[in-house]
Image (cartoon, rainbow, N blue to C red; front, top):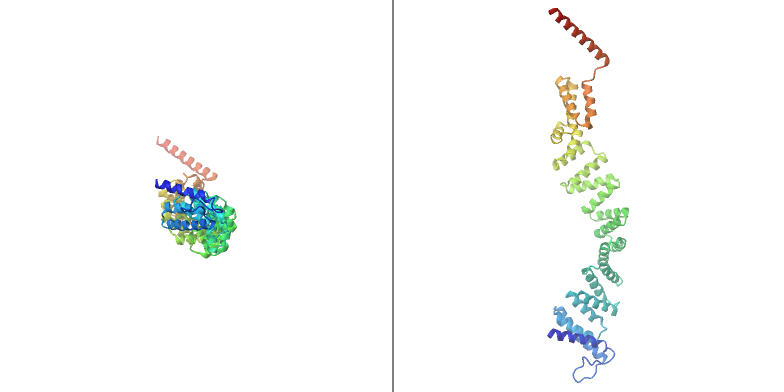
Length: 398
C-alpha cells in the first residue's frame, strides 16, 4: 500500500510537472495556496533533487526515486535530475529505464560537460546488453568533448576493442593509430596496430609495428614469436634464426623452438657439429623421434645411432646398410675375410627395403662381383674336365 502511494505520488509529480514551468502549479501547492510561480517550482525541484541525491548516495533507492520524480515533476527541464534518475536505474539494473533518462539528459544539455557522464554510462549499459554498435556511438560522442589525452586514450582503446568485436577492422585500425599518436611509446598500442595491420592485409606495416614493440620491450616473447614466424615465412632466415634462438634460450624446454633453430641453422650454414649437438638435445627431449635418430646416424656414422635406429625401426634399410658400410670400411683397411662376410650379410638385409635396395646391390657387387663371360667359360671348361676325369677314374675302378 505504501509503495502504491509512493508510485501514485511520483506519477502525479511527473504528470503535473509538464504543466507548471510557465504557470502556477496546483498539484504541489501547499494548503491555502492557489498557484505557484515558475521560481517557486524551480526552488521546490531543487529541494527534492537535493533530497533524492542524498538518498541515492546512501543507496536508499526507493526514497531516491520518489524525491527525484517529484523534482522532475516541478522542473522537467533540468538535465541533472534526468542524469540522477538514469544513475538510479542503472545501479538497480533497470537498464531500459536508465537508457531513457540518460538520453533525456543528453537531449536537454547536449554540450554540457556533465553530459559526458551520461554518454559514458550509456556506453557501459549497451556493452552489458551486448549491443556494441550503440556503445560505439556513445564512445564516439565522447570524443567530441574537450578531453585530456588520458581520457581520449581510454575511449580510443574501447573503440578499438568494440570495432574488433564487430569485425570492423579498418575502423579499429584508424582508432588504434589515433591512440598511437597520443602514446607512441606504449607497447600495447604498437602491438594492437601490428595485429590490425595483419587483419587488414598490411603485413609490412604489421612487421614494422611489431619491431617497434620489441624495441620498447625486448623481453616481449609473444611478439617475438609472431615476428619469428613472419621472418620465416618471408624467407628472412637470418632474422628468423636469431628470433627463434632467443625464444629457445628463454624456454629451452620447447621442442618447437629447438626444431626451428635446427631447421634454420641448416639454412644459414651452421656447422655440422652445431647441428649434431642440437639434434642430440632434441633426441634427449623426444627419444621416440625416428627422424632425429636417422639424421644423427647419417651425420655421424656412429654405430651408437645406427644400433638405436635398428632397435626402434628395424624395417628401415638405412641402418643395415650403414652397418654394412662399417664392416666394408674395416675390410678395405685390413682385408679381413670376416669383415667382408659381415658387410655382405648386412647389405643383404638392406635389400628388403626398396629405398635402399639399389645402394645395397651396388655394394654387394663391389664385394662379390658377378663373373665375366670369359670367367664363366673358363670355370665351365675346368668343371667339365674335372667331371670327365672323375668318370674315367670311376670306370677304371669298375
